[in-house]
Image (cartoon, rainbow, N blue to C red; front, side, top):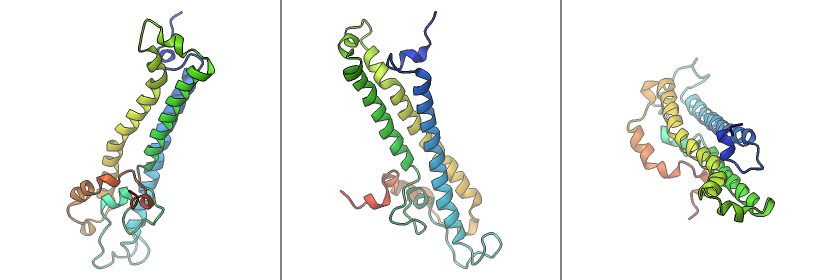
Length: 191
């Protein structure tokens, strides 16, 4: 009977399906929360452009839409002291993958006490692969999702924002605030 490839990427005591399900659901939850955070910030900024009921009343004279960078970083006038950046769930995802890698490693050390045997296997990468493969893949997929979501968010921003309210130099502002992409607003003054 041939072993499934996924069984070679998790510790021997772990169920591969469960590990994979946790990793994929974590990616999905982080992406969904980021989308919800962006839509919340965007809709509040969009509502502030109108004099009365949004989309039914006229746009306030001289109203300017919040910069895209400020919506992503929760830095504009629509956010408060405790607003988290749109991509903050991915910070939690990365911390979760680090915890999973530590859990896998400690299982070999403390649980099955087989770390010595794992190091003596002919394939010297077997030990590291079983500890780090899925957590590292999840982390890399999460980091790859960020530019994709940024493009999606920018497309939503450009499409739904009235053209006369857009401020110039959107991407220059985005690059200037790139350092705050993951840091919550209340932590920006630290360090």
